[in-house]
Image 1 (cartoon, protein in one colour):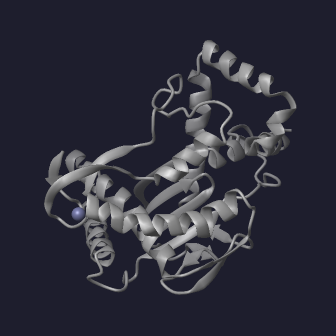
Image 2 (cartoon, helix red, strand yellow; image 1 turned 180 degrees about the vertical axis):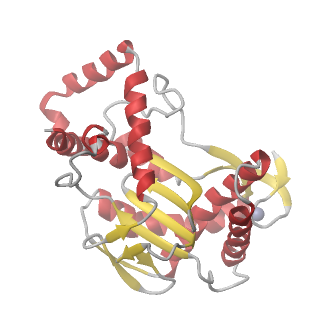
Image 3 (cartoon, helix red, strand yellow; image 1 turned 90 degrees about the vertical axis):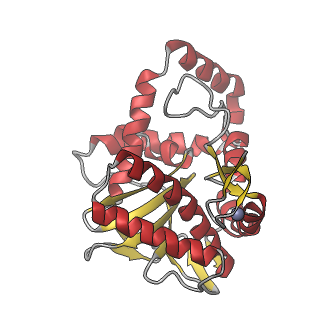
Length: 291
Ligand SMILES: [Zn+2]
């Protein structure tokens, strides 16, 4: 398919691009007991995660090196090898920029079409998209006041608010560790793109309200260390976690009897082998919250 590349702007043949890197979708598939189900129709099996005609071959190539870097520096060490400390360099910052930029670019197209956002929010998003695009094309070396954060969603040991039923029944561990998503939004003066990569939550802040707290989460455009411990986030984005759990609860309610039986059968067939799957610990943790 021919068209204008979203990054370099040239008329070229466009590739079918993934918003969330392909290797992450594969990893989710390979570590799942059942099949991947999408939110739109949880009774159907999603063939693949979201794809769009967006970038030319050269621009795809530009992104793939930093994608591999993220895979080997953060994603696999954290998910598979259970590491907690990550030494990184500028390539991580580049990857995060490319991830949020792809997502923001498509969101802006939709927001503008649907006229669904306040003017000052959409203006800031468009400005941020341009800054990130220039950075990705090496036309500038910084992102001004745009911030990248990685928040590692670990285990919730207890639910502090006793009236927060959703946290108890929304299966936060299973939901957040077993799902992929990426989108942009705003709340008060905080404007952002958020991506959940199976519990590695990437947040890019285009503007930040005064009382937001993000401790030990920021990724800088330099050699540095990120640690998946002692992170503290007090943010309007907490609502997104609640939203994911609500969606998951809804999905559970619309899953048909037949699908439920199929999933159950797969789990039963595994017997003790289920303990080899990462989801096993998530189910145990969620059950502990419910009791
Ligand atoms: Zn291009």
